[in-house]
Image (tube, rainbow, N blue to C red):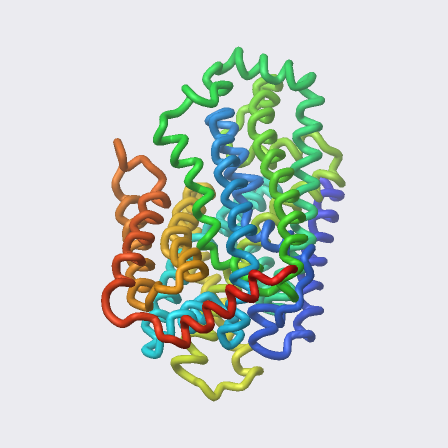
Length: 491
């Protein structure tokens, strides 16, 4: 390990912790800690949403899939880009307006509980359980990615690498809350995009150009150049279905809720989608042309998810390599911090404050939030101790869980005034259970990505059970109409 790599890598990590320390002194109440007081501008909102969305799979899992499967893996990019665009276009602004109208709801359980007039808190509890269940898996995927990075970069034992990565990520989330998370995500998003633009260009140059790279791949495995016959209809459908997950990811939805004004959402969408398209295309190119480079150089790569790490160490001088490796940590940190914060906000706001201690002071709630960050991180760390874990597989499971449990409910809650509390609960349970059961069944039709059947099951359950039992009140209908009127006004 060369000194410049260590210095540049350490400088990045120190900067992230420094941001956490700064916002430690700027955090006064729970709204500041979990939603930044709704004061974020469009640029920070967009890149924070994008960076928290992509996680370590953008620089580890996705390039690894392209390295292994070839160009057929690009179907996932199509699904994700379309899903993200629809999420920005149809969900972002309505959700910002609605949460503000519903007693300034600051968490997703808050929003659901107020939207469906849940006086029993059952809906809030079900939402909290789903969030904690799937975020524990999601966070563990990030810790696995961080451990792989430290293991490959500093030649540490996996267990030691896992501890080091976890401590760094948890520290600034614990200190600075939402503002620290959002501003570090903003910086990390820029770093990730630059790394994913520069790296594939350098790889293509080293293998002699795109044409030469394609020829190397064709000679080794022609199936990697076939976007259709290299998979099945079910395989393509499963990759496209990833896009459905966007509608139900709490760490992305809270970004929409935190922007300072709904009229800035269009600008944020333009910034966010531009960042996403460039980053995903770069990630696909890293894995695809990285395969050609590994073949041409005779490199023995045992773990395809480490292709970006390998390229950064072999193709760049130590100073640049340090920052490229920091980009991987940025991708990992930008998602884990958001997941930890959403999980913490659920435990603090929706369990501790609402159910256990309604008279808690702002200072007490902030410290409860910080304590739960550590508690959740410890559970995720324990689940991450298996060094054979796949980043992409862990992300896929959690992504499906959230997409199915919350996606249909978020859409219908914003556009259908007749959805009821019973329908909301039934949809979340149906979506979650379908994902969990489907995941255990493999072969034939059950090879379809579990998000798709889970999404359909939740949608049907919401509509069916909303016709049973107590209907929405006139007050709920009034607020719905008021929000629709606000959304129809010129921006």
